Image 1 (cartoon, rainbow, N blue to C red):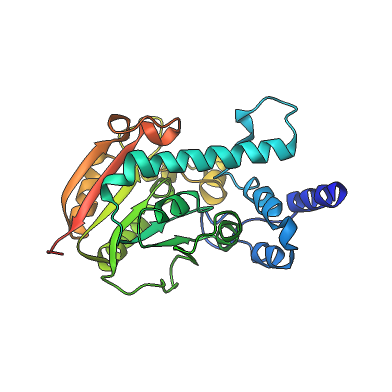
Image 2: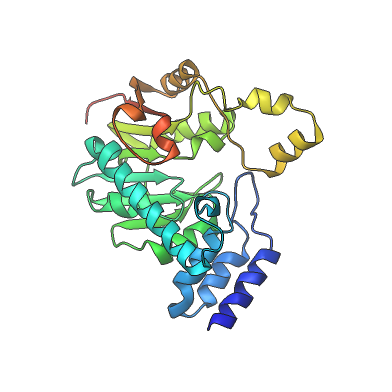
Length: 281
């Protein structure tokens, strides 16, 4: 079995992992297909290996050189799981209710969706990457979570006006302004009157380039990173508040995550924006 896993790992490094569209890592069509063909006893290990190929989820530089592959995957799985449980308990808890229908937008491997599902009636967990959704179904299954592939042209598995809460973590910094505005309009349309959007956004951080600064970089390196790399856009607080207001949200609040949580995660140094769809429940 060790030899077969080594061969799989080597083969994965040679295969393309990008799907269509920006930021769609693990979006290649072969990834869900490969997971479907893999025997049940090996699915979980393969899903972890796949997640380690993406720049989003597992981070090798946190660990000393020489750490075995299996142990690295175990530690990163445990770190992701613990960090998402803390986000549920320290950040999202005030916005959850036992009868709620919730959308986790950009759910990734599903760690947060599974934890949130223990406090609500239903979590719809969407991501633009079919491969990541396939991994989430293997690693973080739950009867209260429905995973789906999100994005332009995709019909969500819930009707408009049916959600009590939409939340999104570590996603919006990867979106251009035009896409973010369209997504806010979708969130507003999907929420019930009085429903809330709880969004993690990076604002007023000089270490993060704005979209305008990224586009203005016409160097070869800058253009390649913008076209092929992992975009990380910074924004200004006032711009985000105006976008939420324009999309129809009221009572928009800006919260410094460091003021409400003690996460050992880069999310803790960033911001939360909360807006409510106008109207009574």
